[in-house]
Length: 141
Image 1 (cartoon, rainbow, N blue to C red):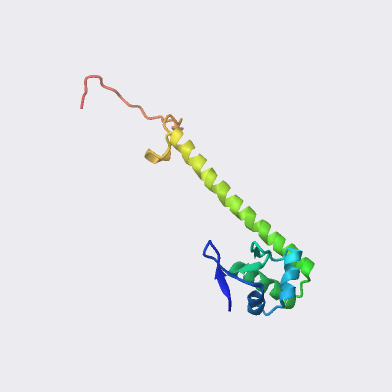
Image 2 (image 1 turned 45 degrees about the horizontal axis):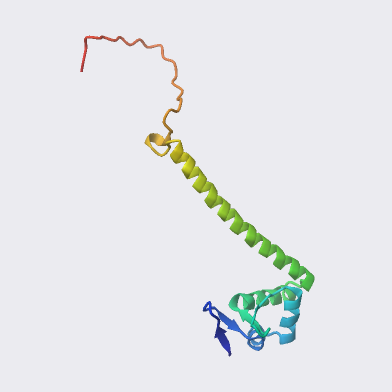
């Protein structure tokens, strides 16, 4: 099998090897590329180079088509939705990190994180009491 490593040290495969690995015809891989189901890297001469992720994507397409009976238009929709979900999950994670950073800065600005986690100057409700306390000015401890 002919696999090459590109500058980023990722293993990539020429179309004939990718076709052999997936058990598909090379023309099928070209069709999937044209449809946008899989988008392999391109060499400066225009040759396709399939990564491990591309191979896994091709195997998933094959599974959906043969085992699940999904047509190519349906597979395209599924892939597009999976990609969108991945983007949203990354965006959500970034927003959560940003929120945590802003919350930490707010807590520091308000003096939280000290005794009891309460900011200084917070008004605390104290229940009324009917007990009497005598105070003696002369008594010192």
